[in-house]
Image (cartoon, rainbow, N blue to C red; front, side, top):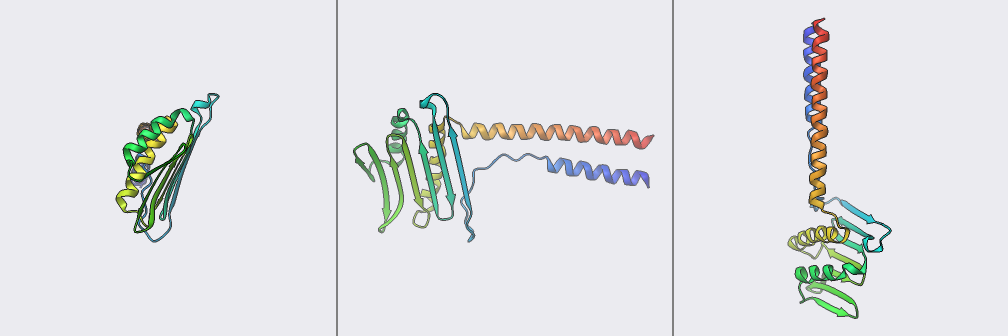
Length: 189
């Protein structure tokens, strides 16, 4: 009876430890297709003594809209402007003073609105009128813009998080194995 109980406990402990500690890499929030409203917001702020390094990025996604808002040092305007022109082109572009604005409409409805000034970038996508291709393009482009503005690398950060989770899981598994061996030794005594 004692051996049966110990076997069941050890098996249960190993099974739960192994499956509970299996790391999964973080995923970029997906666009919801359900009828319930789901929202994902992401915000990052870098504040340093050097004003050229200060920036903030906010990304909001839900069933109805995609919003990207960023504030950055004016020294980054050239590279951001180039990225926007390369991605969105010049066909929907209007330039007023130092403001660059891309507005895409279909059948009189605004699909997206992208406004770049000296130190801000705002992107609005109306998912009711935008097709899936435009929404996915803007979402991926927003991640690229976030990395360019904030100086981060989302993919590298996700890989580091996954590696850290894997190491934590390996340590937990090693600990569980040591505990099993200890229980086996105690049961023999």
